[in-house]
Structure formats: structure tokens, C-alpha cells
Image (cartoon, rainbow, N blue to C red):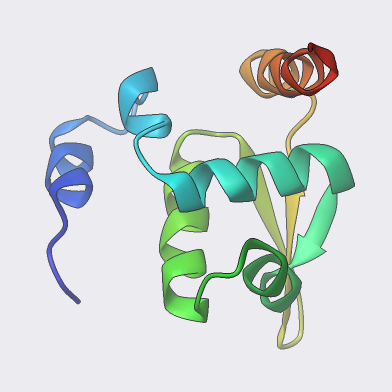
Length: 106
């Protein structure tokens, strides 16, 4: 795996600390995934990759990041992996409301 700057920064953040917001929004692909899951609730990884127009490994990397940020949760059913937007998380709820507000504004 190629070492990306965000990966190096993320490794420096202890597991019990929040991920900095600038790191969360530093990737267009990650923003696409957040937006998709905030709108749809849950999708399998292949559908997320298709809709976000990302390859599978990039999608998986972003989803791992979002899990660490506690914005998404993985559910596994055999070989099927479903990722669910954690609406019960206050930050995830606020982020979804921000997206809704942003897209309704003109």
C-alpha cells in the first residue's frame, strides 16, 4: 500500500482522539462517500465505489478512515459488506444536516 500523507497523519492520532475536521474534508472521494451514505443510509462497498466513481481499494481506504472517525459502521453478511451511516452519532447527524442545508441553499 502506498503511504499517503493522510495515512501518516492519521497514524499519529491516538485511537481515543477525534480526527481533525480538516483531515476529514481533505479528500474529494471521502466527501463523496460521506454524502452518499448520509443520503442513502447504507450501501454495500461495490455500490459506494460505483456511485462515487472510485475504485474498490480507494473506497475501502476511505471507509476505514470514516469508521475511525465514527461516522460509518460496517456490517458483514458472509462476503457482503454493508456500510451504514451512523446517524446516532451527533457529529454524523450534524454533518448530514450540513449537507442537506448546503444543497438546499442557492
